[in-house]
Length: 431
Image (cartoon, rainbow, N blue to C red; front, side):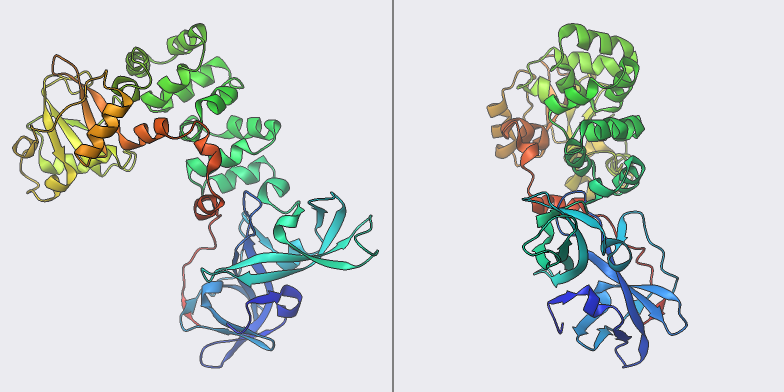
């Protein structure tokens, strides 16, 4: 590109040319993605006004050069549909300029008078710096414009600018772990508004990405009926971990409100110490009868609701196939299943030699077991050959990491997964 930092005031009005030199229109604005944290927003693309005065969206990926006199696009196609702003986006000229902000260190009020976009090592463009002018207080000399980094001001992040409805619309595009991280950074009143608005399934997914202490704090806001519904929607092992943090009286009261079919596996898990295979396991692995076909096993593995570690193998048992099962026969690894004819029976590919974990196995024993056999999941079997559940590597990691590991997620991790998605990439015309 011609420049690696450009102020938007210099960019607006520049002509936009296609790769063949044909003039397409003029730059009128930039659309950027709002973040849920204080990281600089990524530039999604340019709002270009065509010669017909129709405004379209041109992704930054299509921009090859930004020179003082023009913007040039790469070979490819862009949508000719009229530009429509998404709730998670902000227009730099239309909405960011003249917006009030506060200076981070002093708290003084200022207004944004310009913004500079910069190219990162990953070739993305971000709003890296802002030009601001003091509003009611002196910033150096009255009226003087200062250029500061994005992180030096507050008031322009998603959580600063949008209400609960806006946050919920953005949360729909985010992973539960990133929602949990964002939610915990909100004021208490906003936290309560958000969890009151999330449905039980979504809230359960978010709870599972929090520490038990944070879960307990938010659970206290819910009435008992709603709390029981959320616990039912959580995986039994996560629900048991949360109930284990409550008093016996509170845990018993919530268990009594849960449906018996949902509470029974949780009650069984609570009988084991939390640092044993019995306490760590999930009682809902993929369990099949020996007369099930390979096709049936693969269909169960394809279920997107099954975590990847649990989908690494199926467990073969005599009826009943609900834990605790009938006699445990062995397991079938997904790689072996993929090599077999779909019409074959899982009984023909069962690994009967793989060692089992007892429910009393300690955390070091489980760790050595998974490492020794190069597994991401392993069967937990009692002394009477009943399958009780499966322990997965993520269960082990959660207990090996420091208790506050969720609070130590790097900014890079949040940026990768917490960034708000851009415009519909549907492309219908060559540029």
